[in-house]
Length: 189
Image 1 (cartoon, rainbow, N blue to C red):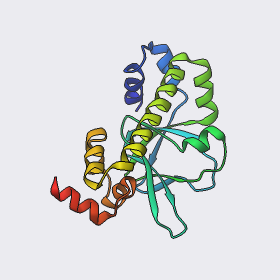
Image 2: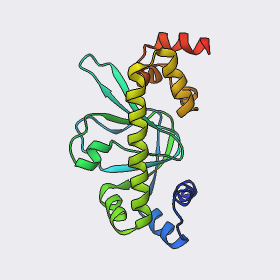
Image 3: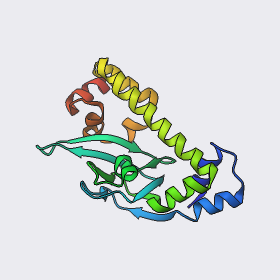
């Protein structure tokens, strides 16, 4: 259950078995159903998740009830409602598993204790933040000038499994397109 997490860490920073065991001891397994909410709008996020199997999605709802997908975490990745988690404030988004999933969860308290006391984990956290920032910047600034085809090509380049794993509706909301436009673009590829 912990091997994927161990592999994730050791691929990024040299870590001995004792340190890996200490990190893994703070994570607990969680199995979820398809479309299970991990966080409701307005709740304060208390958990960080590592995806062993499945997918986590972060999304918002506008006043008309239209969903906009903001982030997806697939196998071998971390996911949480980061602003709520960091600021310890009510979330302005929802977090759910869109597939039957197997996660490893760590509490906010344990997470920051590891960041503060285990240099390897602090390094991992910094990498998660940096990669998230870079991906968000590429998506935001790239999408501003992209037409529909360029948006789909971008997601194929940077997140190759994305369109295979996520529904057209969710993918379209992430890309800022309508589902019908996304379908037409995919048919052209």
